[in-house]
Picture (tube, rainbow, N blue to C red):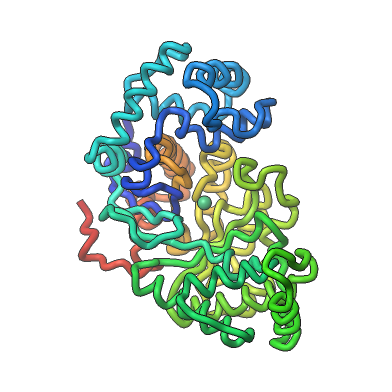
Amino acid sequence: MSTIHDYLNRLRIIDGHEHLATPQIRQRENHDFFRLMHYLDSDMITAGMERGALSGRGISDEEKATVFLKYWERTSNTTYARMLRTAMKDLYGFDDWTVQGILDVNEKVKAATHDPDWYEKVLSDKSGIDLAFTLIQTTNLGYERFRPILFLDFTFKLRTWKDIREVLNNAGMNAHSLSGYLDAVDALLHRYKREGMVATKLGHAYWRSLACSKPTFQEAEAVFNRLMGCTLEDGLSQLETVPLQDYLIHFIIQRSIAYELPIQIHTGHHETSVSSNGNILPHSNVALLLPLLAEYEEADFVLLHCGFPYHSQYLSIVKNYPNVYADFTWIYVISPTAGKQILHQMIEMVPQTKIQGFGGDYNHIEGTYAHLKLTRNLVADVLTEKVQEGALTEKEALTFADRIFRDNLIDLYKLDPKDFPKR
Ligand SMILES: [Zn+2]
């Protein structure tokens, strides 16, 4: 094994983006083998499986195992499938892809769910993760290696008076005007920050375009007032509410700047398990963000997923904008080949202080483990190639790894370096 591979395998990681449930939630919901599908579920649906077929309550585990195996046969070539295979083999010693095999390992997964040390074993001992940011709608995480990032879409995806009321309830405030509503959103952000939130997250590429106009307060207020005039359930169309949404997106960026919170934004590929039949892919093209990136020079924009499949434009943008950071969350399991190619180009184009190297983006720690194992190898391969080409010295390659997997996250998310000594 090369020095670089050996170094990468031992490096302790700060993981910039996950969707992991807290250990308490996992226990309460009694997660089993069929809760470990996540991304693979999307491939199975693409391969013809009915949506929700493995999560239905009305069917037995044996029936689920049968359905699973039917679609496993169709999808076992993809990286999502490979990740499940790696996790099950390494963490459960499982390699028996039969109905009986799955029923047996299902009991082991449930036992792990109720093992109080399982998170620590998988994330710290097996994966080498010091800290992970997880996107979950609570700041009460109950696990010391987690820090929260909250989706703020619910504060601007307003289609009914009920949506507004939910935000106000959340903030513990009342309001009868747009300015009152803005105060409530601001109070929420302030509270989340106080409770440990390290960044804000905008996931709107999943349900509308990233393009954002600059409405005036009066234009936004007119929509807000129309919503307030609706009955609880009746609402306005997506198109009618765009001026209000756009105004609120600007507001959230402005308040994120005020609270010194980086802003993570989804760009590129849509996961069908999230989007169902999906938003329109070109709506997630990173180039649509340019007016916002140009306007808010003082913001820290973290653009997720390398913008794939718009990664060429993404590379140009990250190269040119001092306030924009690259983030490799999710990309290696979408396509390791694409991840490798993008990393090669990133090293050639983008200053190393602007690159965040890993976010598992999984909703279970087994997936995070497998994704990180793949990532360590892949990044070591790319760095070895760069050294062979003469583009980097070996020492520079190791420094680059330190940067993208640790130091950059400590800097950007303002973690205390004393809490994360290099081991
Ligand atoms: Zn994510």
